Length: 302
Figure (cartoon, rainbow, N blue to C red):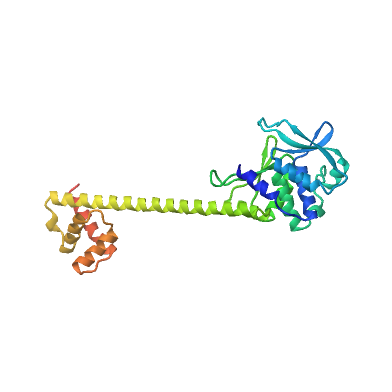
């Protein structure tokens, strides 16, 4: 089962108030309905969602429907589970605001109703990538311009930074920030999905930090090796030209320790020299001695 299906199935398990129920149904219908054989029809590949809608619609006595499997126009193999309404279509249009360009304020007048409306939109047209197997991505595919703008406003009222793009067959609302997607799951009340999502977020974040630290450590090691090889090269030039005697005693000492501890960084080498000679020397002081070695060696390279 996809993560999208998991989230949608969890939505269908939630208990909601009567007003929230109307908001959810309205959102689903507005983003899903079409006409089939002259009747309003809503559909989904997910049988659980259709079963959930049937439960929600059960309290409306003025509505009746028949169930039918329809071909999927998206060229998928799965059939669409459809509800074809044969009674109460005017009631559906008016109660669930099917053909109104702007949603009436009373339909989403409370936070409970806003959250439920977003659940309905997600059930109808939302999808979310599994954070374990893909990039962070949540999207809604909405055919109507005014509806897409309305849903964007609802999402961004929670500071989710939802972006809107025009597509050939409608509009795509999307969120790509992991923490914002997690916030959305919290808003719609899918707590099990939140726990899974955030667990994967922590794992991926820890893995990325570890990789960055490893890369940084490798870069530092490469730098240490490069510095050491350069210093050893300058030392060899002085030895080949019998110029070691031109150095002062402290610099000669640094030279001998570099030859002895070729893989040590300057910081490590300064600690070694300080411990073994009993004469404290800083990394900066040691670097100054190696600059003397380099300056002298360069004179023999001209």
